[in-house]
Length: 323
Image 1 (cartoon, rainbow, N blue to C red):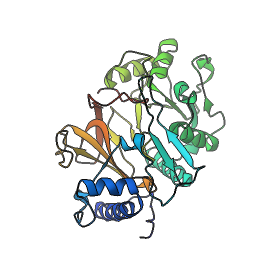
Image 2 (cartoon, helix red, strand yellow):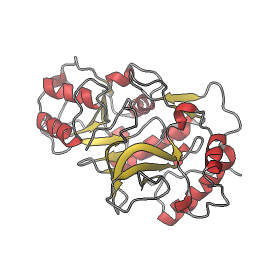
Image 3 (cartoon, rainbow, N blue to C red):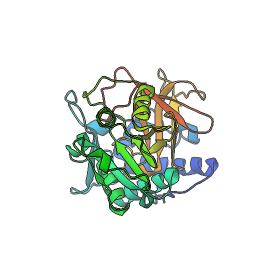
């Protein structure tokens, strides 16, 4: 079967469903792990005629198997790994056969939510991610900063923050949650013309807080009306962004479905809490249909909230705060 072409642009829901079915058939034919899983649960193409019947691969397979849609995977291919914790025995790995596909996805996804990244000066406060190799977040931020305005760079908690922020310069401050909270304790100053974006994650550095508590602390310290959030993970090549109160919106080539926690093949009605399934067309060369361990709820307009994780799910390196 011919490799599908991924369009990083707006599309109708009918077209999205048709593209998802085409991608499902392609990955069933070309991904040994996904095909074996589909056969095991009796969801081969013969049984999958509708968009709603497409099966989602449990995210844990990215820890135990090489999830690729190809006959063979190059030895020197780009590999992203989850940041992990001291309790983590094995890190998830995402093998990226076509890095340009990831670059197109994160640039188009950012533009969909915020406009061109080249309009921003990007300041990244990501100490824990910089300490580890194979981070998909660092790869994305590196590329965005390379093309953004002068002065874009990684910053540390030892910086003189007063000299970093100028009211006239449109700025994106993106940071892991515990580091942004550390910054807020040391630096209270209005951040005008600045988007403050948290990527989630305490990494054992701080007491876990609900998202509303974190955002309230940051809003007070920086005199801002809202804190933005990013929803991404090693196993996905697209990101969703929340511009207000933790309500995420996907780019057109990504969608969320909420499955019942007790029945992975049944789906929740809008606003009901369940487990998050993600469709990500950018995962063309791995698996585009991922059953995550995150809990959330979806709304009629396609936006969604993340409200925690399964009790049995291990804490992720970029773990999501309870909301």
